[in-house]
Length: 305
Picture 1 (cartoon, one colour):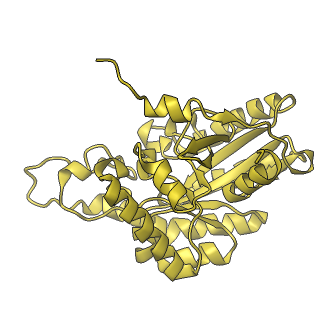
Picture 2 (cartoon, rainbow, N blue to C red):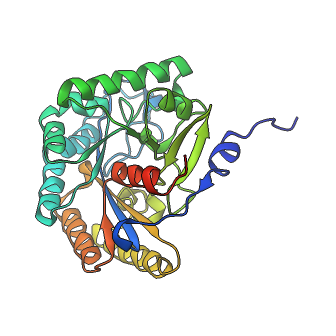
């Protein structure tokens, strides 16, 4: 029997293109994305089978005597203890603001880091409660409860709620956009099917879809482990993608997003973040912006009522 509804192609693939004009005639918008993430310690192998975290493969064998994966937990903990502070220092050095995708559990485990992210003017982006329990495991009601619970965590901790959402694992459900729109979110970021933001509509409400980058693109540092490359390789990927988009932006404004995972912000990786930012700053017609700034600009200047 042929499917009667293809959620992705009916919603995302048919999303409305936006005629973009960036502020002050900029050719390209560059959005820096920090990821401050946390995994549960639930001793359930099904939550670990497909999640390459840090440099090792999480425990999968169901006959192990201990289901707790302390090595992977240690690698993840680097993000909240060490990596996030390196990324914040680099951003301060360059005078730039970023958007941080933060799990609710990360806010509970690393409250001082999240307070620093907010205090330094960076955007807090909803990123589910935990990285390993993704929305695809939840019912619609559970997903709604999780969205609301995470909003409350950030509201209680720093006094603001997120207005953008990137699903953990970039895996949302057929209900996610509706639930986000109902809760007043302005943008969603799981899609990788475009180079620039576009408009999606659900139940008479609209959201801006802000395409992200997966590990294959090179603009997401998770590729260091999933593809077996080094931190140094990231700079080449950044420069290649930047140069191609910049060339194309002579005819049509473009946007580039670079992902910086706190748990992967080792010294060598931090040096590459620094050099990538410095390269982009060497061009005079680039707009560095948080994703919420991009979205608000588009809604106010490029999207008709």
